[in-house]
Image (tube, rainbow, N blue to C red; front, side, top):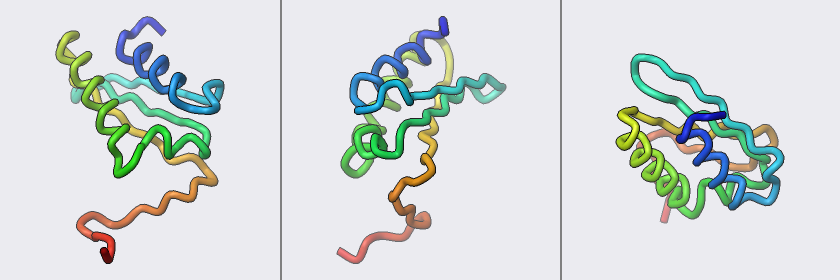
Length: 97
């Protein structure tokens, strides 16, 4: 794994989760840029996503900076693990508060 974006993401995520040995990153390159797919233990999803997505947003911002430095467009997809209790709402739907 000699790609700076993948190396950075792996190091960062492993340092914030409780199950670092279960962190998996798949890297694909196409005409649209680099896609990093992140898989973590279901119990670690909250730590990776953060409150209202703040941690995930910060990670994406840092990856964007690495991409600019290396002339690449980097996208991060956090794959929801099996057994996750996270509920997705359809786009545009808000909570009742």
